[in-house]
Image 1: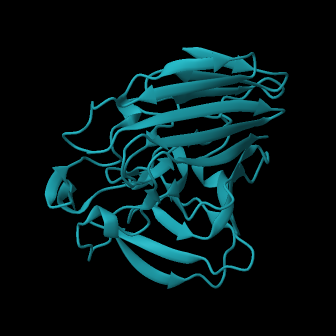
Image 2: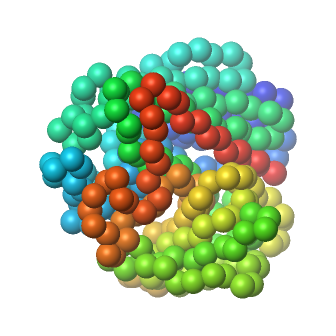
Length: 292
């Protein structure tokens, strides 16, 4: 486990998937990330690549060939090497070197860098296309934040606030059988209370959102996730049908990509939200999580 820290935060990161496993706030003593309890969900903040969400029939076509790939791709399950590290920063690197050609025909180098600035953790992704042709991919974050943060509070004491991108119309989507359906433009973006049944019909998904805040209405402790320029964001928790409530965590997921639409052609080059990267070029994006 790799540890970076400053005067505000201590962050534990696993080389497996370059996954943040724990964030401890030194000034208020709170641990903000989900524990990874497998009784609910065994991961904490996987990186999704080269797809986000599910493919229709768990497959896609590319240049006349069909490939099978499970939900969210494979990068979350590879071992990264530490590229460089200081007390408050660390960079991880993974070179595919033909390891995934049976499910994804492109080779790539993935770099994930974490940097602390006061009470914020900045996450930077770099994807280098090492092929002699254009490469198609999606990439997304999937961090799970613990709720409630304090023992004397309940899940319902928390709320989500959405900040839309300026001069853009926020669009809302819904999942049906894990596939995307467009609901339409959102005319009134406001505070969303976390009720027991809010995720009974799966995730809340939007486009043209710049920031999502998850906070307690009682203590005002929370986390602010800022991701200007990201085309999509998902907000989700596992709905527990046995007792009609949600698991004790909430995901805030900035995405460059999205699950297949219900009417997809299945061609990766035509996939809704897919990114295209020229040979030898590097895709780069970053988002920030502020813990308060």
